Image 1 (cartoon, rainbow, N blue to C red):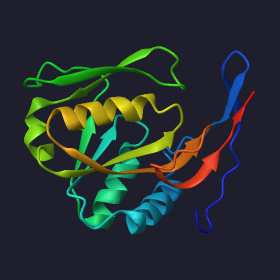
Image 2 (image 1 turned 90 degrees about the vertical axis):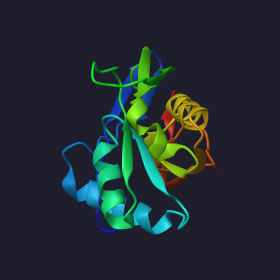
Image 3 (image 1 turned 60 degrees about the vertical axis):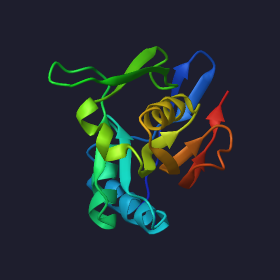
Image 4 (image 1 turned 180 degrees about the vertical axis):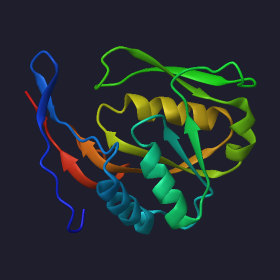
Amino acid sequence: MGSVKRVLPIVEVAPGVSIALFNMLGDTEVTEAAGAELARLLPADIDVLVTPEVKALSLAHVLSRESGKPYIVIRKTQKPYMVNPVAREVISITTGKPQLLVLDGMDVEKIRGKKVAIVDDVVSSGGTLASLRQIIEGVGGEVAAVVAVFTEGQERPEVTALGHLPLFK
């Protein structure tokens, strides 16, 4: 990302499948550079950003600051304070097991009738992306863009990304 470079370790995530592990958590320099670059690529008509908890949260914050668009976090657990939560199950390549994605019902009106950009760190199998899309469209939002630092594995033309990472088999 610009002049910011990182060497990514190759990590096995399933028998016979390895990835170049990109983890921006705690890496302020990478997060700031990626967020600023993605903000320049964000369509002007986006109303709100939506991101899954945890790894892309700091990226969404930078994108929000740079673009002036608010962001909403889809949580990975249902919290007792949530009102009428909307949930979907997903299997991510990095976890290999079912996870829950939960939108607090208090955030539904911030999405309904709005043009939404999904923000993620890496889009690989597309499982998380599909579940986020179901939640957003299910409450009346329109997914108008998907932005990520990297795509991984198969090409994903629907994702605006700064780079592409291969899967290693």
